[in-house]
Length: 173
Length: 284
Image 1 (tube, each protein chain N blue to C red):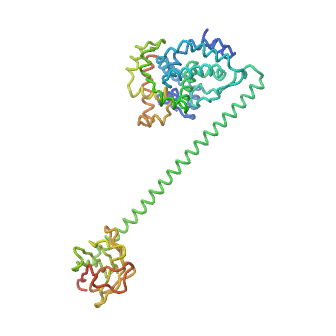
Image 2: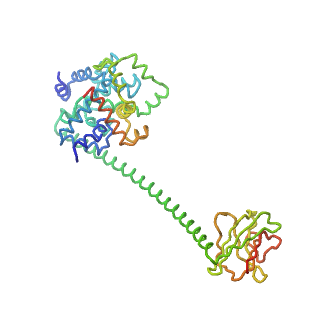
Image 3: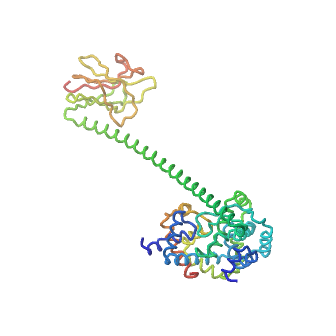
């Protein structure tokens, strides 16, 4: 199935099409969600919700206005960020400190980009630049929250983001 | 607007990260629709971010797909369990919940849903605008009271500066005579100075080194005219950094000035054994 076919099938309510989406995107979405919520337990819940949301909300996705992958990842990011804002999540975090780094080491990504490649890439990014991307993209910080957290004006946030994206685009552009 | 400047301004990156404000997001969407170059740039940024996200990919646990599909089967038709609205500022994920039935049932119910969503959308918009306005009002108010405080401080400083300047002018006047009041045997190391000007008709008192009296006592200044003391008023020893201007009383030809310690409120006649400092007017 091509992506266009999958989307069409989803729009018709075809549940099998969601399985196709799962096969293509589950690793990326699970990775993103896990990075945000930092707990495999919570991530599993959120990822399930995300796929159900994709199925339910596909009607609002317009292929002419944006890429499906962007949309899918944004649904996941939003759901994960929302999950970190519930009181239940905050309570859990207090009692259950999860070491994300350790987890990542023992469950390497099996996606199209291998772990070594990722490490190489991340190492190439300036720490300051990576932090801006991570705060915004993976932690859902707002402009002013980033300004405060990093103690830099929004103009600098933009500059750093642009430089970081320039680097990333060498790999993914 | 210069297109290239817009593309390189960083706003597209901000937008792709979900950081743009709702106004900025609308602007980016409009620009991307009008200008293919903007759309291209935006696509490239989004591809890069997706790549970055995918690079963080982790294989989910094996049973997750089945669990998810089970839940999908168990989903009641046309009813959404999950009513969490999506965040506003993200590009394409603005989707509000839309039940699966709505897509397949009659045009009327689709229209009703669209209407409902539009209504909800406008309520959200109204709320956001209201919130924004509230915040802006609060900020303006805070800024206003700060300005008011600064203005008050400024006025106070100005008054103080003017008083000091007036004193300076008075002391420098050619006709001003300084009168040194020296300690009497009970005065210890106290001293004071009276600046007396027969042309400008002003009298200033420099507290010099008078001690702070007990709470029930006050110092009182006297002018000696023809051997008789004349009341020049009571004063507090508080701020010794400026002079005290003696208001309303001017003595034309004093021979001397003296300060005595009196019960609070002052006395009709000086308590002579409580005279702390005294000085004769030269040529007086």
